[in-house]
Image 1 (cartoon, rainbow, N blue to C red):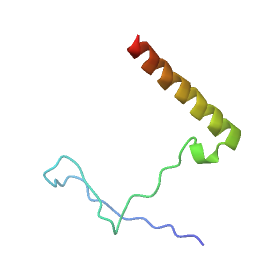
Image 2 (image 1 turned 180 degrees about the vertical axis):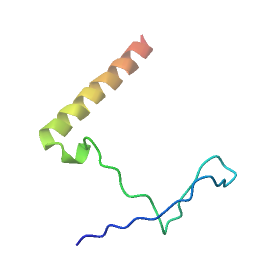
Image 3 (image 1 turned 45 degrees about the vertical axis):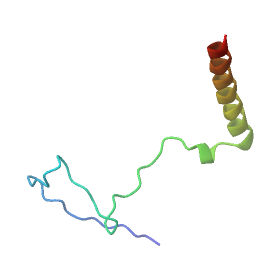
Length: 65
């Protein structure tokens, strides 16, 4: 099911807040992510979580010294 469409934004207009915004009825399409934690294998996610946890505990233990 291909659901692609485009809409035109006239340039040179001002909304008074320095840019343009879209309402919930016309959002920008999702950007392609170069990586996603959800696409990582389970062991890689667990390893990354362990590394982050060790780093945070190191900060806590150094702060308590």
